Length: 435
Image (cartoon, rainbow, N blue to C red; front, side, top):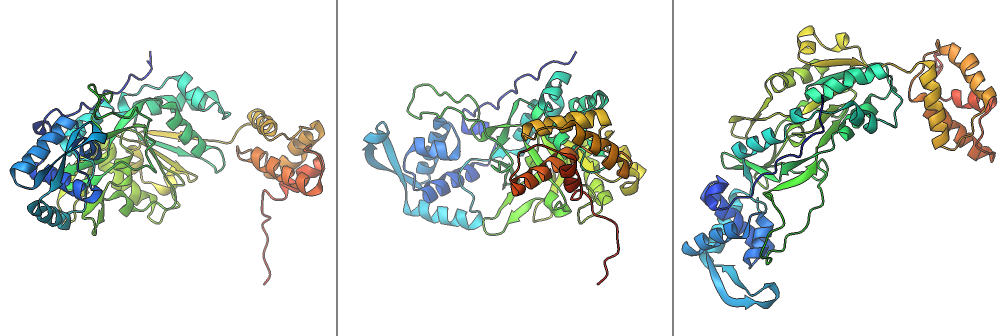
């Protein structure tokens, strides 16, 4: 029996510099650059800025003092619990400026890639077991046939790739968002990771939704934060792309000014969902996009490249959802389709579910139903399009009728004549335009 997802194990905070598994010079330089850029003079303030425990930060301070890069100011700051102040020496300023010329990165200390890999395993998307109740609860605003949930449930719980296809306007995007909402647990996203001395920023407030945590008091005897604060505790991330997706968006983004990298979209979505909406509308053909994903989808790892050309592996722990209005056989070859684990067709509703959706939308939009109008819609209008229903149509028609009512200054109550006027805007008649 499927169980509720268990809480993700948090990354433990480092206790010493040796626990960091980062080059000593790199850590020292980031601390110096942070002090310089943020005008920091106290250990507690620096610890918060570089996201390390105070005792580890003190080790960095002591090491910098040994190398004559920092000196104590000889004064205690009464406003910060009597902390000793520190400042850069002339040698420290020279070293800091040299470090900044090599990389502008300062702030949160990065997490080594190998350390991050272990955290990805602890919070893998494939550890989730979504129940039918969770899925129904997340999609309660949608009217879906039971057999569709029969297919969606195993796909989500497997954490494997999903292709949803079918005619437009039937809720493929809404279903994708419902899958995201069904995953209720939290994960830990690194602010930045390190590989071969290079810093790659990962945490992105646009993609990641941070969970509010109690702020740590650096002067308190006990720390309330119980995890490595180089990570941000977040909802499982969701990246949604559409027709704008291009292959170069799946590569590392290098900032030549800051001399740092930004993680590509699929790395930012680690532990969550990557939704490729409107597949087939991108500049690159769908086959090219799938070819780029072959290794990640099969081996749960991706290959990225630095500016130097050096390639390296990163975790690929993402539920990829492709959504398209095209038939899969028209845009993929069989080898590509074989690599997509679940293929689910999303059809339009039957008449019974269409009426449920229509009534639900009308109630939400305060449009009074009328039996004669509904009969007119079903018996007169829909036969002209072979009784083909789509999920978007109730909302479209009711919004049209509300706009007409507002213009005419009449109550929100549908009628056959309102149905006719709304219907006229739902389709464009096939005809030649004479210029």
